[in-house]
Amino acid sequence: MTPQGSFDVTTVQFAQLAALIAIMGTAVVYGTDVFCALVLRPAFAHLDDRALGAVAGFVHRYGDRRMPIPGAVGLVAAAASFVLAALAGHWAQAITAGVAVALLLVWLLLYIRVSAPINRRLTAAAENGQLLPDVRVLQADWDRIITARAILQGLALAALCLTLIL
Image 1 (cartoon, one colour):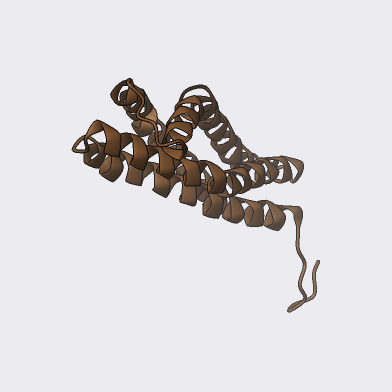
Image 2 (cartoon, rainbow, N blue to C red):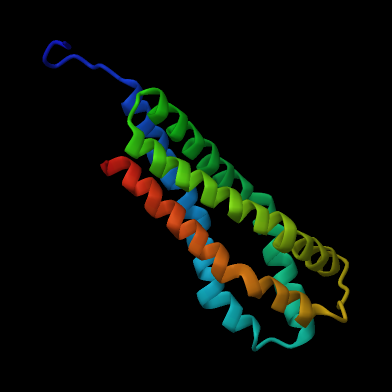
């Protein structure tokens, strides 16, 4: 038994801290994907092809450089929360953190297989001042999965929040 007032950090508390860190990283990516789905997608539909290529290319240039940090923090911390909760035998927390990890991995797979190749093409064209003849098709393919990406991030965030309250 811990004496009153002393600071005793347990494995469960580390699991909760990891979940909190995961929430913070995941929330950044979730908010960005929601913004893209709700704001950028319809706004981009009103741009002419040259403007679409330039704006989308430079948005992805900066996004692909900066967004991996909060994304990796979210995924690694969610995995740490899962492992620590499992080690502590807190199965409800372990399950919700594990669900979050699975959702984030599905999101990552969608990003790597669909979004990233499109981002690279749009970025290269924008940096070189080129207009891609298929810029609308590329953007439509990117738009096709942004809602799914936002939903996956939102569900992962909800699972991580449950990890804190269980």
